[in-house]
Image (cartoon, rainbow, N blue to C red; front, side, top):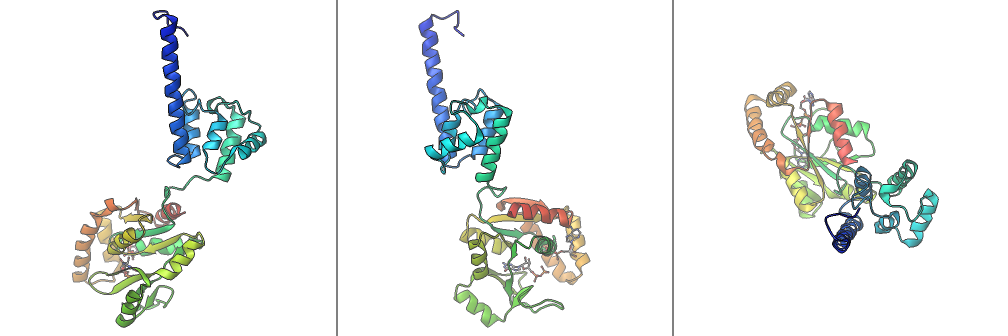
Length: 298
Ligand SMILES: Nc1nc2c(ncn2[C@@H]2O[C@H](COP(=O)(O)OP(=O)(O)O)[C@@H](O)[C@H]2O)c(=O)[nH]1
Ligand SMILES: Nc1ncnc2c1ncn2[C@@H]1O[C@H](COP(=O)(O)OP(=O)(O)O)[C@@H](O)[C@H]1O
């Protein structure tokens, strides 16, 4: 629409500047898709929310070739399969074509999960008695596809605990040997008492098969995993309230008064570290919290 206040050449110059700016924005968006700064689905969402935006003004041909796995030959076959004309702009696609394009991408290039590009090594930590063991056991029962790592420990087995299932119960000398031989991904002395460590072998094997691995370990261990594997997913389990945390510790009845007081002191310090974690999950209801952790892990 010519602007009546300006002579035609001023309009033309302004229009040409706008066209150059729009081209630049489209090129930047394409780069973002190619370099995976945004997912192709992100770009479609922007285009369809605002068809006049640079994303909406992008041709489907440009969009598809911006995706690393798609060259020109593949692009033309995809467009033919989806019955989309190569001259179409993303913002101008009809409902049926939008649905077809979206379904194609979701099938061929599923978006990264909530982990946002993080690895399938998931650490669940949190203060004493928040319910880490309970939530991890729930996940083990309901998500057999997730490997729950079995730690080595120097503490004595409790009644009912099975070697190799709950822990690998080892003596100090064997624990030292595992540390010296580099068999542990991380290890720490927990609650100033026994030593605990995560055997590396089963984790590496499961990750190589594309499985998710869950470590239920203490804060010191979580920090070591972060240092050794910066792309690990760190989840901090929170109690619904401080009073509920105290109730759970007392209710479990596994510690005497003195030990309980010591653990609660540590718990205050540990709660203050929650900002170091990628995700926080409140353990109000075991099944709900477990589902949330499993979803972050998937
Ligand atoms: N760093 C580290 N901590 C662990 C490991 N395995 C268990 N823990 C932690 O050790 C603590 C004690 O666990 P446990 O002996 O089962 O006793 P409970 O938590 O008092 O029932 C918990 O905070 C666990 O998260 C491990 O391999 N490494
Ligand atoms: N969501 C929950 N609601 C109520 N009680 C819980 C919940 N999760 C765990 N508990 C209880 O709290 C206590 C501590 O749980 P536990 O799994 O041993 O904690 P942690 O492994 O973090 O030390 C246990 O008695 C457990 O049954």
